[in-house]
Length: 377
Ligand code: FAD
Image 1: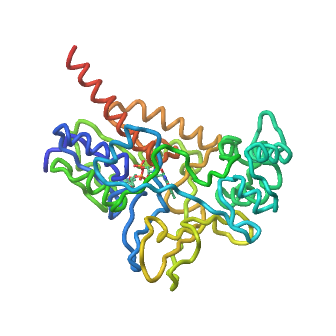
Image 2 (image 1 turned 90 degrees about the vertical axis):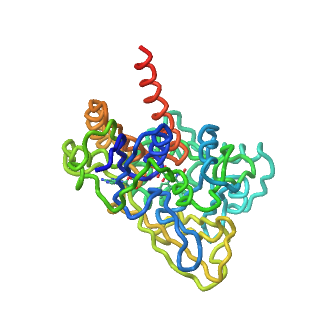
Image 3 (image 1 turned 60 degrees about the vertical axis):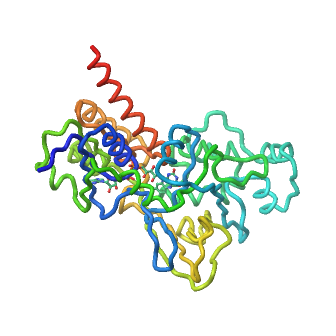
């Protein structure tokens, strides 16, 4: 068997970055990935309509981290893309996050300045000093009318819980704009990779020191590998410990059922993403991939997203039960000095892509600095 210095489980952002960093200092790296492709949840491909689509939901890159922005630019060219989201409310299309246009369209008002918008919010919001749950957090920001139209049922569809049943932290950070800014994110860098994410990952992993074993579950083959210096594990933390701390079952996740459809028309909707926050349909949003990068094709592909309990693990469910179970795994994980638990599944935490890049880059620097310091002593 070939020599392996570094064994990495998972070819998503966390695994790919660590593989590239270690390969660059001469280490022989093997990545074991259970899916039949690299790129983790960022994986995209050209579909039958000739449109670049993401298999696991639209991925919009945005960051304020110079380090991350410089790193991703080594491996791909990027084009600027300021993401916008529209919501279908009361049969009207309104911008999300809530801004002046949202309020004017929904209520027929004629707000034109920031002061007027702040005044509208002050008149409509329900001030609550220390919101105890998600409902109070939203009422405190925007009041009952917008809460009902845009958050109450959307949250129920997304989490299978009403905001009142969720921690305040889940909804406390919803952005509300007092101007006309209709960008979904406000980070300094907002862009998409020119050739798509899969190509970005191919470039990150293109190194003679990196081997990749696809369609292989680490737990089916782990006894075949030994003698490596370090193991980086980016899969679910509870699976690593064979679920031994869960009281009844696995750590909970929300998953998404992506239902794709070809529409025989140039376009289906006016924007890449349209949210459906109301009760009239049971999906949360429709993505029309053709809008990203203004792609050209005769037909169009739309994907409806239904949030469900079962399936691929996507969003950790922040509640006291899961936090308690995770803390027990974390204690075990911290004891294993040469196994590193990296990324969103291993830390049971939602990461944006830039955070996943940053964590992996920081971990590599940290571990390599430790080695340099030990050698110097
Ligand atoms: P992953 O990408 O999940 O990689 C982990 C890999 O490990 C997977 O490929 C998995 O198959 C593999 N694996 C697991 N267990 C095993 C095993 N036993 N053996 C072998 N392999 C294994 N972020 C943004 O910044 N912008 C967005 O617009 C955005 N949209 C998102 C939309 C959705 C629906 C979701 C779920 C996430 C979104 N994200 C977005 C977050 C982004 O997907 C994550 O930041 C990123 O995927 C984290 O990378 P990772 O390496 O930690 O995990």
